[in-house]
Image (cartoon, rainbow, N blue to C red; front, side, top):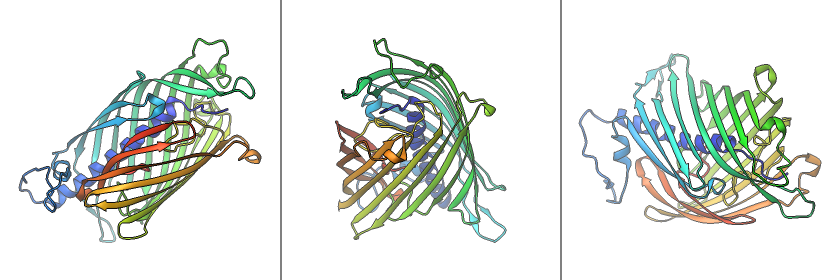
Length: 398
């Protein structure tokens, strides 16, 4: 079976990419606010060093309220759309731990999200991120509802071209994560939970999708899990060096109110290294494995530029991608990247299907120098079509 990725997975991944960007943006905004004097500065969109267009001061002195507009270019969601994410910040002063070291505290962040795309998919939701200071616990809570129209592919007829099935998902989602910081603050770990209730409207065709089971039409997912992560990057937006490692798993069972009995494990590693003063190399490796009997819309898929979300899917997915960023002139950079991936159901047939590839190029502009935040556009070619992506920070934001 190929491509059985649902709106729930896409919402999880795409939404959390945007939320990670927002959380990080707000954290660094607060850090800079704390470091300034009480004097109100003159807010300008010109950088004090080179006079170029720069949003650093606007972000820093936004007085606790930021609205992040986002253009959605995911092919699986129609190729074009938009989202508005208003965020409110509450400053938290730094604290001194028992060892005498100062520890900066993330701001409490409360916000919402609304999105709409060309194929009439829409979603609305809200989120909060905060810190329990004395307990050294970082928490996130998110809830939303979406009406999403997505295409799925399967082979109903042997030796024929994959058939496209357009499905509609109406889903309610709730997610929360609680991570305990270790003595080394780069490390953190803790539990997480996902609840997803979905109703699927099937297309009116002679041959129904072979991957849809009767209980998938209206289903409830309840998943309990845990996460362990290490983040040693020098910058969370557009890193020049450092690595980020993450491992997480989810367990789904009728004992916790789920319609499915399944496990899901994900491992990922992202690294950056300066090859020269102006040439930065990056490498990404990810693997995901599903066990048991998960619904078709939560099977692992391939996440690569140039390939629609989960166009290829199986119980296992392996993704590798490399990129180069050349800081060509002042604030402008050129990008080049390529990746290989595979999705399969059985390890003994891991590469029985053709390995999926993608490659492309793009550019970045240093939009906020004080945050090292770059923005740009990537154009990528997969096995079938060309796609483009508007990128905040890094395409590998996690």
